[in-house]
Length: 106
Image 1 (cartoon, rainbow, N blue to C red):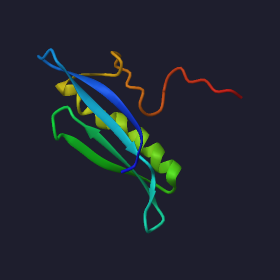
Image 2 (image 1 turned 120 degrees about the vertical axis):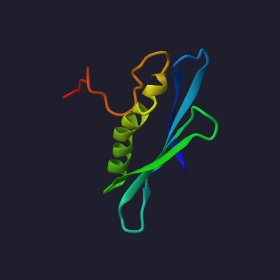
Image 3 (image 1 turned 120 degrees about the horizontal axis):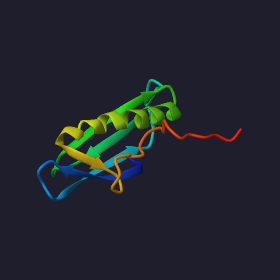
């Protein structure tokens, strides 16, 4: 996987003082032999060897990339029962598409 973006998150495990790192990596979209596209992504941590690897599908590279960014926040929700997941101390992980406070220039 050729990484085109990554984000480091912190997981404060319930009952523990030390924070664990969760590393999110998104790969470059790749065309499949049938003409469809995939975007690979990985979530590393919090434990050594803990890696989630998946791909998002699309009809072109842009859609596959957008789908990966759309799916990642849901994938990261699986860590919440283990503790508090943050980015730079805040719970807004800033992955995916913003839903509030969005403005556009017309």
